[in-house]
Image (tube, rainbow, N blue to C red; front, side, top):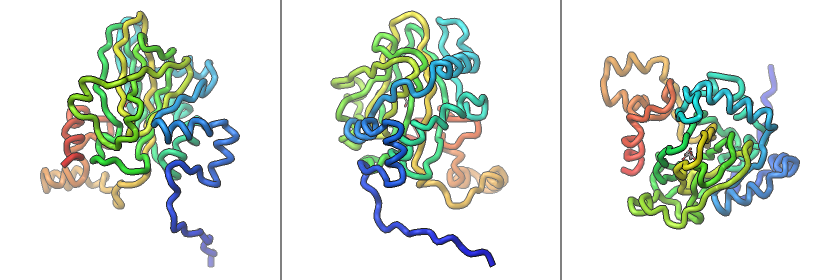
Length: 279
Ligand SMILES: O=C(O)CCC(=O)C(=O)O
């Protein structure tokens, strides 16, 4: 009879600032201690030149091709990218991103979203938000979502870089309507092309309008903690169950929110999903 491997049972949970014993040598080898500290203290960090410029150029080219923004005056976007080209597989499996994701959202973390955006001159800003948008406040002590923007073009304020509100990560809540409007004390994250800007689910962020010529090309990668998934996977049976039992069954099987969409986020359900999380 095959012997069952003995697995230690942990009875404690590591605090958010502590790097696990097994991850510590990886973080040290990759020189990411500072990034871990910044993620905990300020809620965001920049990994400078996360890969080669050859990789960055390939990534940028593929995003332009898939997002339908061929002319440098055009904007666009794309999603479900892990299934569309191996360059995105390379991005999400980047060893520095994987190490920081394990630190921030725990061992066994999942990929939540791989999308891209192309913003030309004149591109409007997105609204201020915390990525813990489908969590009720107060947000938990442990981070649930880690988002990375792979910055294919230099990040400057005029170029429409990501905006953050320093200290907002300590508030553990969503911004209110006035804060969304005023963006108090907002700063620009500025860094070189080929960097990855990462932030936790707490920090309030948006982006600046782009006032310079050309395009800001970004790959958005979100890793998520493994918890709060269903124990049983009914996707193979969902359409039949919903056809027979209607709306309540559709809700129970996740067909009325914007998460786990087979074609990526369904933005028509976004606000309703965020609202559900607050009631
Ligand atoms: O495009 C940006 O700079 C910010 C993107 C963002 O808000 C997000 O991915 O949650």
